[in-house]
Image (tube, rainbow, N blue to C red):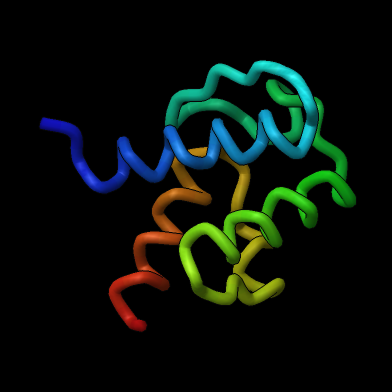
Length: 83
């Protein structure tokens, strides 16, 4: 059985692929900037799509600590628990 984090990581990969218009394979250890080649504008587009998917708001100041897909998944899961 997949954990909530695994499901979130998969959704981040799907969303990133849609925004970037290419097939994206991610794991929790995938570095968003280095491994995916995501710049700040693309990251913001991904984040906006994820906010719609998960029906939450991701504070910009919290994104400063996000480096990997796992970091982003953990942040989303923390925010989901609070809503």
